[in-house]
Length: 357
Figure (tube, rainbow, N blue to C red):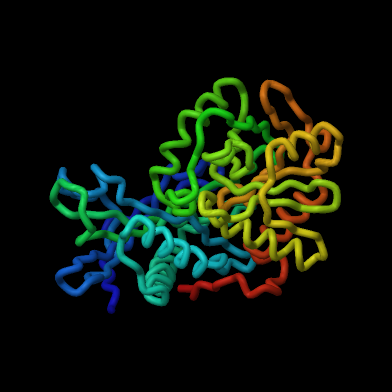
């Protein structure tokens, strides 16, 4: 399928790197592709000027939550080149999410071509200050113009982009996390492993409660036994207990993070013992109490890694590593960001270069 490009006649001024924040500014264009099950599937792939969408009030996405999305970044190297980090992993995960929500599958190679073509056009929007990047948001939603719960016959796939500032403008400081014991994020057999909007909406209540008392995010427990660690906020989580690095196993209720996968591969390459297994909150509490919990961190696209300095469980606060970033967390941040921004060699083949204009 050919991708048509219609360039804007009114290009926007680029914001300064020091005011970017996250998701506040958007580039000049967006990629759109339509799906019609009865008329040939995916069609009309196009890049058009960024603008509002017009949707029927009965569109499936508004009423039945048929929506999925991804998040990845384009990075500018010291030489001025632009590159992506493991984009095919995001495309494959999006297809896994689509299968669960019963949205149509994307052709992986064409989706990568669409992403590459779009970033090539918008690459001048990729900021160059340390820690900044061009955030890419592919998303898909059901667009049948009728009410009633039924299989999806029409859908839309879109990619938008936003230049974003450094996640750690004030430095890589440890965060305070509250272990949530009331609300749950997901259950096995549900949509926990899919990157869909409903999972994030369901986490808002607990997140807001935590923020009101001074915590950055919540640490989720499983939704059945309420005893096993799952995720922290919108990130995967890892703990260094003794000489073992533990991250919750992907049991179907946890998002299979690409940063998580990269951390595991990096750690094992450097000789660390990494276990993907069930970790009970009682085991974690014991490790916090007896001092064998050496480090804890979240990992995800936005933050890369986020050190955890304090965990609260059942009203008791536990300090992790003197509320300082630990050496393993720092190493992961340095290695991953070095590869992403092109200051360290990519021995794993994770980088996808974008052709310069």
